[in-house]
Image (cartoon, rainbow over all chains, first blue to last red; front, side):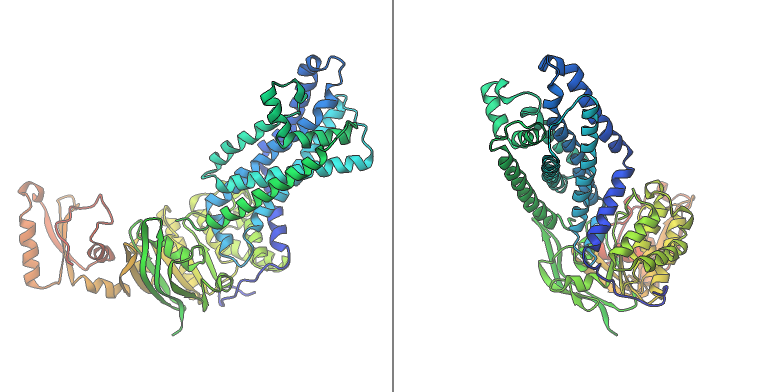
Length: 264
Length: 304
């Protein structure tokens, strides 16, 4: 390609090049977001220590609480980590960079794929940190390698579901600040599930909610895989809920992406 | 001459607001076209329609030989857009921004890297290439923004208010670069609120007012439209007190001076009258009948 003298037609990135470029971009963003990175390590450590040493004794005097609480903390941290996706997406949509991508012959939605894939990878690493800290404070899972694989797979599916939802929230929000605020509500859901206390100990009306909300089956399924507790139908409910959330968020998100084009 | 942009009967409304109505535009290939208009006249909507971001409610627009409605990807392959807010990634460095754009434009790794170096050099960003864009000044950001648009030297280049908010030096620099782009053979379509910018850069100018083209022509055509001269009344401190466009005849001049005479004596103490050639500002005022600078001189009359 020569300098100014001639004009040229813009090429179309071949195959998944656009997706790869955007995944790299989002990962670079994650690595340079020092605060979020620090929180991704500090938050699971703090929660783990808090629930094991502060609340753990009261909740289970035998000292086995750590084995109960790990799945809950994994989901709590994954949710927290995924929430920054809303912020990143909203920032792209409001700064004008999206208009640059939309006026090029490529799938502009690849920019969302980049954010989602980067979030899944980032939060799988955060999950690794949670498990590492958990083992250090006495977590002793009984899972076989296959069960481990299944557990990680389910966690990845959960991260994908909540990330897709946060991406859609990022598209719906009018500003990055609003995106963060909406996301906060979702982060509260794990507390109203079987993450920290058995559902039976809750007042009846709350127990009903906790039993029927999507977080509980995901937690029960992970717990059964890692600790050999009975899963019942939880695994199927968990997978079903995740797929439903992904489908709804994807349809909602792609509608928003198309309709928020070139607002004046 | 072939047309780089051929838009006919474009209409667009957002909810109850009619932004564009029956807009026609014809821009010859290889020229610089300036779209002037006050805020809210529909400049950005026009650019958004021509760059495939927004679909018009009615009308057709052919850009670089392709229809924006039926073949948007063919249009996208032949245009670049520098929008009003700098579309740069602040977390990445200038080099990473350029590499990303080059890869997204289908350049292979090596070609992308060399194109990148070339643009960093040309836009005087080589020294700052490894710094995060978030640390850049407004002028540097704008230069990078334009460099990103030129990763592929597309036949048609859209610039939406390219120098808004820049200091005089940065503005001059961008003007030089825009001139270069035009000299390279590209068609440049720019919107601006600065009449000087249009005067300096554009071969042809259209004035957009309330959603339609109110006047179109070369800068000198437009100036000729408002008449031969402008009579100004300036105070002792050289501040502009009043101005009146005239057709340059003695009769018109006398009328103008009579009108100036009617101002209160206290306001004209030490004032003097001057006659000058019309500027694009006068054209603009005459066409849109609204002042561009609300803080300016009291307007005691405009010629229709």
